[in-house]
Image 1: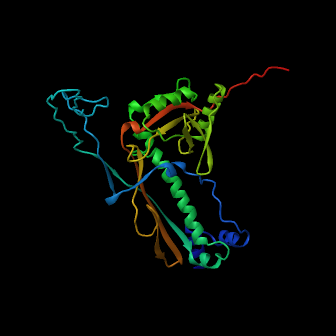
Image 2: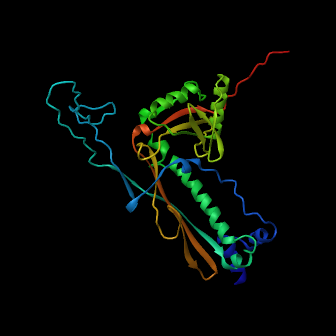
Image 3: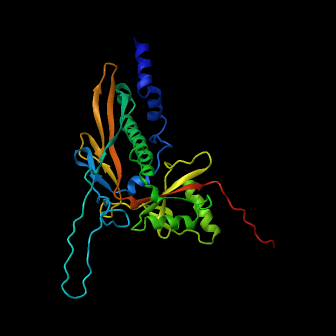
Length: 324
């Protein structure tokens, strides 16, 4: 019975040996290389979704024969009056009959900790607290990846065809980022790119004699272009050919930008949209805690986001210095 229980424990929860090492051999909490600053989560304004569904209402596209603006939306009929008393136009703004609905996505896992382990080996470091902390960090890392890459609402997928461009020569040049700014010119907030893509842009800008200036946010330095910071994330993949994508975002509901969606006020909440619930202790003495994160992301209007594709990170310049 003892051998069976020990095998069961080792498969489902922290081993006693690992907990003992943490409790007696060190005074530092466990470290995890996967953890990143997750700037995207910090820079996105978050909206609390009531009822689990976020309905995005937009102006309807103009039907055939009705005047449209440059975005194909129903045009508001207006008249500029300089003198006299002309007959004023009558108008109204039409909305989509079937607005898009965003249903919150869920990331969940169950943390198993043996009560014997947490009771005996929590003298220096709280074993349960650290298990939950590191699990939450992993959940948040997964969330940021989903915000960008999810097949239904990820930001890479949400960029419309008219908001996508490619680099002129493969490497990300100042010209390419300027072209991106023409697509999101109404209060652009930040570029989002893989660290290697940011380094590649820095090489191109420096090559042209315009090294990017630096700004400090959250106590960390970021290079900028035209005053817009380039925010690094390793959740934008680089393919085998060394190609990746750079995004440019406008954020916030008031600016008709990109917003994060979450459900606050759930049971066992540690922070908005993230909860840890005790699920009980089984016959093997293993306590279970359910970790849950409810989230999504929405793009208010098409011109709130644009992407630069075919970004090569593998090109380096050879500099020739004069002799003597």
